[in-house]
Length: 151
Image 1 (spheres, rainbow, N blue to C red):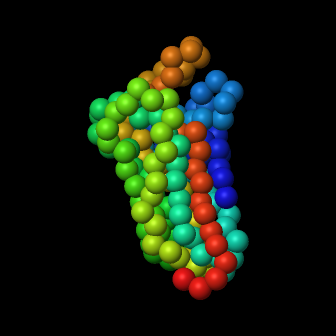
Image 2 (cartoon, rainbow, N blue to C red):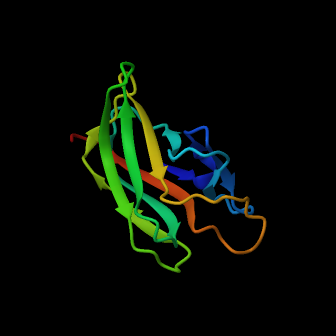
């Protein structure tokens, strides 16, 4: 399953997600004074398949600290499990870099769990980018790989 950056939505009232030009990538835009930054997408995975891999395509050109990625499952009691996680902490001028998450193979159970892919950028912009220089941190998209069979 693949999800474009534009499908991710901010999970904190002080941050909104913004689309960079028209290429489908997203970045965080500060609209208040808060510190929390989480930009997520609910992922629809085929029931009973096994999650075996996850990755995201990012731009990380800021030394403000690591950016984190998490693939999570939540139940109706707000319990959660971390299925996959990764981070990037070395700034680079490269426009797009693939970040692979360490994944614990997990059988999808849509009856008990809801699945989210979250990006925690370490830096958000203070103004909307309507010019050609790219934001310091961008999310082009995320990918989750599943297979059929036993875990």
